[in-house]
Image 1 (tube, rainbow over the protein chains, first blue to last red):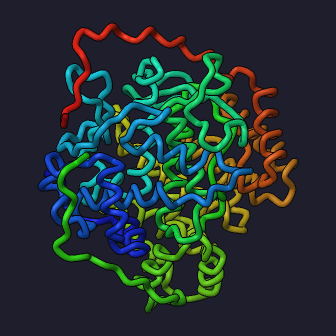
Image 2 (cartoon, chains in turn purple, cyan; image 1 turned 90 degrees about the vertical axis):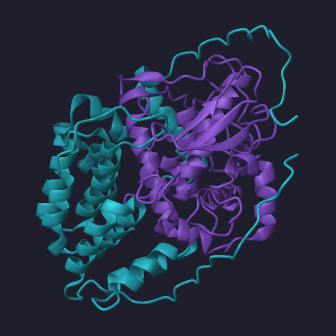
Image 3 (tube, each protein chain N blue to C red; image 1 turned 180 degrees about the vertical axis):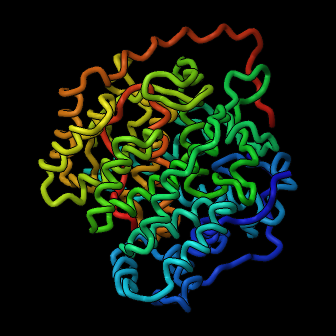
Amino acid sequence: MCIDGASQSDKDLWATHNCWWAFVLWQYQAYRMHDSEWNGYGFDDACNVAMPYPKAVNASYLITYGLRDDYALQWHATIDYRHAAEAWETDTHNEIYYAPSEDRSYLAAAETGRFLAQDRTLMGCLLFDLGASTNNPATRSGDYVHEGWHHWQHKHGYNPDHMQGPIGACTTSGSACDWFYWHTVSQFNFGDMWKFTTDGHYFHSPNQAQVEYLCDLAELPSGFVPNSVLILAKSEANQRLSTRFRNGVPYRCGDPRPW
Amino acid sequence: MPSKPPSRRETVAFERVVRIGLSRHTIDDFIRFAGQSRADEREAVRALIADAENEPDIIDGLFERYETAQRSDTGLALLILSIIGELRSRAALDRLIALVWTRAPEAEPAGHGALSEVDVLEMLQSKAAEGIAYLPTTEAERETLRIAAEHPAASVRSAAIAAYLHHAPDHERARARLLEILRRDDASSLDRTSRLVVSDPAEFNAALTRFYDLHPEHVAPEAERPAPPPEPTEPPRRLDG
């Protein structure tokens, strides 16, 4: 099992909804998190943010309500990131489901093209362990988008693997590197993030989808989002921008002022 | 459709912490308040931190909390470093410098999507570099330039470069100074932009376009053409159906 306990940012975000029950009842269906997989991970104690399932709910809440949807400046809309994260079938990916995993060799893993089984995303204990640097709602919600984009790759016929690093400007070792396919803000209409052309003018890699979400969250959040969550979103976005792309990226995320 | 909805035993609820000033007696309460403060209260928190500029013993108290947090809660550690940096206290400089130059552990492959120990240290070091760059002293400026030029981590150099440019009173002069000292492969970072610095969408888009005009080597190649979908050998089935 994972090590139970909530980070400060999980508690801060949780305090903004305090287990809004109608949302919990929507979330488990939208993310297809079933009792059969999540039993023992807080599915039967869904208002206890120390447990993995409520933490997954917390991250879903962030992705569902955390952006102000500034059409002029955001990379993409809430609906785009929701379609990547949520489990039901859309233009972004086929229907999937989420399951917890005790594996700590990955943050989460999109399993695509499974034989005689539905595709799914496994959420590893690194997303939930007390003391893990990634036990926070910003990372968890960003990872929803990242893994959702692997499912996008599968649906649209692309190889869902990362490149092995280090390579080019990607300084991370292992299967961690992607290309960054640049676009301007407003190049994609809200709701059109899933669309693509093969020349790279309209295209996203999983790390790119993740940092565009994290950066939208850090820079253009809804007013209620706690600053502890925003500081994490900015830091993680910039770390990934500097270390996960084979080519140079044209922007940094957030205000360089400390607070 | 899933058959059984989640259930709750009891709701663990958290109350919002009331707004509180920062003093040596309120450090823990202020950290909790600052973490819970909302996005639209950022300026108000900055003002509260500025009010504490001359409070004694705050820096020591904040670094004590940082030392504990960096072992248990990265988000909390970043939050505390943000407060320390925003205080603009000369008393913090040596410890921020020591943190920035802490030697990273041997790089290990990051598991899929994970942040390695090195990533986490670099996130903390980047935040510390932003704090150094915000200090209005000659020594802090010299240290910011040293980080921008010599730090082994690209992410930390990038944070120092962006902060130095952001706070410089003369942007062009700062740019020229950086160009003299940066690694050659970091030069393109001088042309990076940010939506918080260039908040007009047309200007921001123009800055993105200019980056690639100046550095066409960073344009990604055409995405690999989709492979034909594999021939199904068995009809697809749903796990739950």
